[in-house]
Length: 133
Image (cartoon, rainbow, N blue to C red; front, side, top):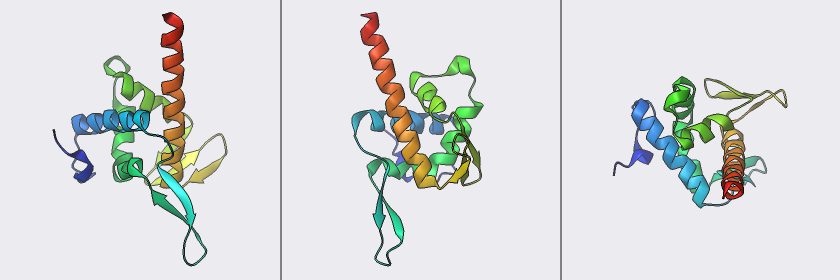
């Protein structure tokens, strides 16, 4: 299996980005907690500490570009979940506008928001599947 976590984010093609999205969603499904934990640095300023899910941050923009370019008919379940998590978030370079709050988010905040939304999507899907049984 290819280790995509060490790949240069600019070298990922569409297939690599789609595979990374699948892995990202699976990681969120199998772990708890956010991608980044807010801490206080030695100088007293707020800081973020990455969890294992935070390792995807260098690939976030490429994963986003992949998700918005994919045709809805070719969506895998994980790609659909990832794309839905981006609703209301606009990406501008490495800056992200969170429309419902009308403010910009730093990448660590976007990752945490995506993790929260993806978990919500996965839980809703599991509940719907259980209701169908």
